[in-house]
Length: 302
Ligand SMILES: Nc1nc2c(ncn2[C@@H]2O[C@H](COP(=O)(O)OP(=O)(O)O)[C@@H](O)[C@H]2O)c(=O)[nH]1
Ligand SMILES: [Mg+2]
Image (cartoon, rainbow, N blue to C red; front, side, top):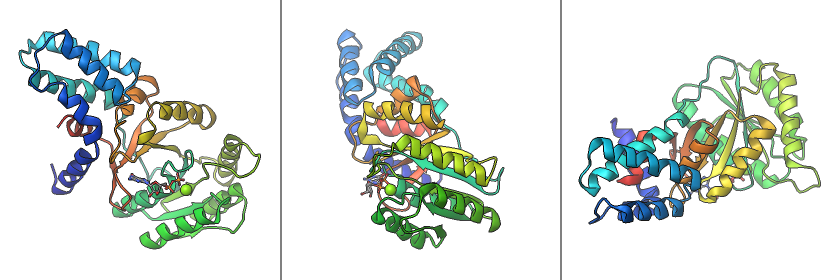
């Protein structure tokens, strides 16, 4: 493992401690018996893994234990890490840029999920890979939201399209047009998570998407949903709702630092397997990384 990724792994491991300890505790001084599976079931449910994924993991684990003829609990814990890795593997997918110039990425999610922060971190990640980024402040409903994105633009020294009190779709249209004219590699569109008006959020987001397509017939190329890792099972409901309205291409799961509900990724993998492009473990620029199933399972189980 590269040194940088090792640092990230340690951060992830610390972040997932609250989710992981309950699960890890099951294996301490344990025998392989029904009680172990029952305790594991409770621990997985407590970690917000959800009923379906928990059932799936337990069945899968029993099979592995049998085939491997495991004799001690530590071995079972390693087999659980394998089972979780295989379950999460389909969520592993890199965000591809370069096929379109610009690659237009629309970012949606409920209020406070971490959209704007993740866009800031993602900008840094993309810049590190040599991509030029343009930000679109399409959360025009709150002045604070616009200013927050401006701060991230400054930190990353990237350009931003912003309009005081403007219409979110108009800002998005301008940004995509500007992105094309200026030859940017990526346009990141930040959106609102809650509207102060009677307007329906989903309608507003659909409108942004439509208008972006008017500026560039192939766009948006990605529609990302940002979810707060602390949300637990409700995150799954959000994934379903936004996917049905917008057709999601990927997820960003934030706030995995300090959550006790990190099992929700397993629930997503089982019930709505949309790729997790990135996960976030903090508020700093470098606290966002690509999702890796094996790494996640290892960080979770120690
Ligand atoms: N601990 C932690 N806090 C985060 C993370 N991502 C975002 N936040 C915080 O969550 C709050 C809401 O984030 P924001 O980006 O404004 O959410 P938005 O409403 O979806 O745009 C802010 O205080 C962020 O600093 C994360 O990965 N870890
Ligand atoms: Mg925001």
